[in-house]
Amino acid sequence: MEMFFDIGPLWGWSLAFVVAICAGLVKGVVGFAMPTVLIAGLSTMMPPDLALAGLILPTLATNLWQALRQGIGAALASVARFRVFLLAGGAVMVLAAQAVPRLPPAAMFLFIGPLITAYALSTLMGRGLRLSPEGGLRGEAGMGALAGLFGGLSGIWGPPTVAMLMARGTEKREQMRVQGVIYGLGAVLLLVSHLGSGVLRTETLPLSLGLVPPALLGIGLGFWLQDKFDQETFRKVTLWVLLIAGINLIRRGVLML
Image 1 (tube, rainbow, N blue to C red):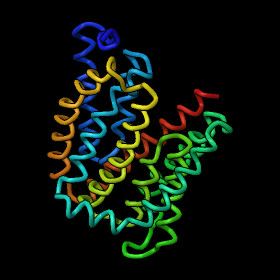
Image 2: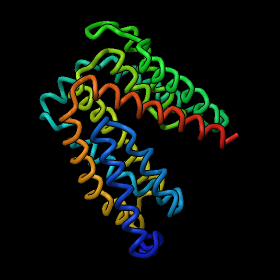
Image 3: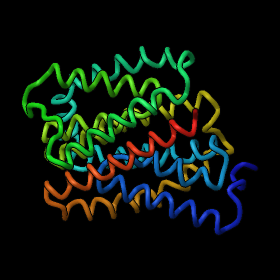
């Protein structure tokens, strides 16, 4: 259990809980960015592999709540509606992952970051991409493939997913639900992968379990705030978070050069 105590004294645990609450709060409001907030905050006080282990179970638990908030029937209906996106994204992600060893680490961050930043800025200015809410299967498959490409190469598929949902004018409850389903499936894969890799093991499991309650508290507060937003307020808040995420991806890419 030695690594369980590597986080430090009580103030270290308090800070980790605050990070988890903040990450859950952001996710509850806009539906994404929780792993980004967790890994950024936890990495300031512990090794990156321990921070990665810490975010696995909170991410899985919060996505499960987000996906099933309106019931399993609504979640399955959302899966059926966005099946083209999911299938295209999953297929491309598996293929893209094979190319990871051949690419410089900064490449995908410096590719996806400017695209997401440009999308968020243009949409905030009223000139964003628009897809048909009920059709546009080619566009949906293309966005799914793009998200899968980014996910396979960099582990980041949230921003393209949000961009596609917003471009289709998805109602906020369904947007939140679909994100929960997509990221929840990814969180299951993450759990299985890192049980195999050894990142999540006996020594690191208590940290991940310990961060679940504050993460659930945060997402509960976020849901409460988001329920008070109308569709337009939700859209603008999401775009601002997406803009920050895009800029952060550019920053990460530049630092890797």
